Length: 108
Image 1 (spheres, rainbow, N blue to C red):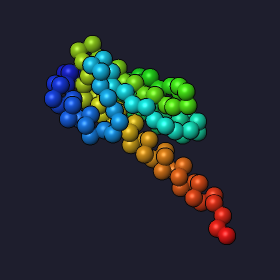
Image 2: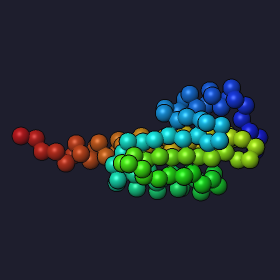
Image 3: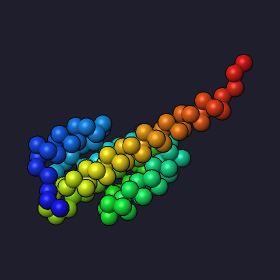
């Protein structure tokens, strides 16, 4: 797959909240707890397997860091699509956690 032009890459990444590009990778840091990290990692693995990519997802100082490295010829639409799927998974994971907390609270 051909590398993305810088204008297209900038436009695509501008649609993804919090993702940055340093020409070698796209990355994002999520402020989520351990259980959300585990859930996000499992969901990301499913997407990554489908795209045949290997993002670097790790826990550092209580934060979850996701890095998606470029191919030899540069970032492609596949890497940006994976970032978008991970972003969607993040929204689902944090929404589920918020819903569970709400259901678990007791009204007085």
